[in-house]
Amino acid sequence: MRRLPPLTAIEAFVQVARTGSIKAASQELALSPPALSRRIQALERFIGRPLFERRHQAVVLNADGDRLLQQIAPALDQLSDAVEIMTSNTDVLRLRLGILPLYASQRLFPRLPELRAKHPELHLDVDTAQHGLARLGEGLDAVIALAREIDPSLYARRLDRNQVYVIGARHLREGADPIVRPEQLAGLTALVHRDMPDTFSAWRAAAGLTDLEPLAIDHFDSGALMLEAAAQGLGIAFMHASHFEDAHDDRLVRLFDIPVESPYSYWFACRPRALTQRPVKLFHDWLIDTIADPSV
Image (cartoon, rainbow, N blue to C red; front, side, top):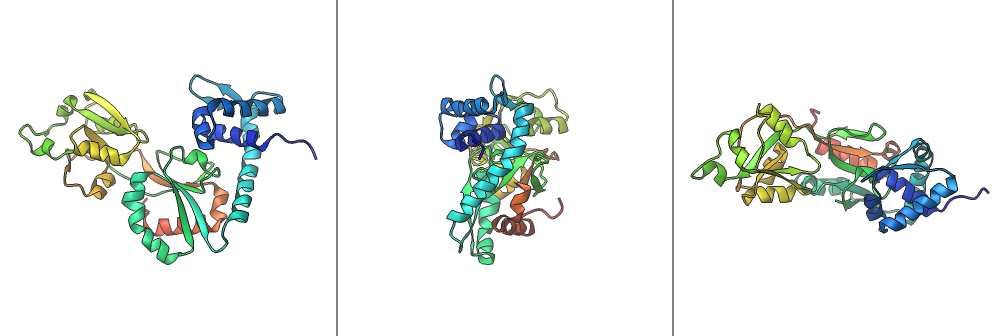
């Protein structure tokens, strides 16, 4: 049999290719960045050519690297599936699901008893870490992601469409100097989610206030903390209508009645072959029938 490169080097290569970052990939594999870089270098020496273009804050596959990824990533995924099948309890179906915490708490978890009643054999391993789409097949079977679009190489189903709401503390609308005009936002801090960086600019354009600049723009990676920050008067959150409505928080109000379609949606995504796996198929079908907006 022809000698093969170390499996750890192949795993490192695939993870870096999917995340586009040595730092992110090293976190996923619980390695230091230098250790991960050494594994990549070992694979490049074995192949006899570089596989990435090194840039300032990222690494990008070159043509040889992209060709190698297309050849070996499916095989690595199949190997992972085979190990999972051999080590799993056959009486239990297990789905490794990546999901954002706010969607999990507001939309998914209130309906999970229905899933358990319908499919008591199906159990979820819930993962709220970042880079969920990049980790499909590498620790995750499926992801509920917040994005504009999904990579066409993946299977994806849109779950909703939404409006951008301007959300603030109740006293901003009912206090002595209420916020009643969008122009007044110039003196306040805008709160923006890292997965939805264009919500403020989309709302500003729809409101016809392209020159409006807030006092500052603070970025969050937690929707729940954004809502809490807004309730505490720390800024104005630019989030989805569903985030506001499902929060049921009397401390919060919608500040302006300006209809703005969000460029972002929640999506169910997985690798196409994953839909042949029973845990993924059961969850997908239940999600679409139970939670997804049928109009999208």
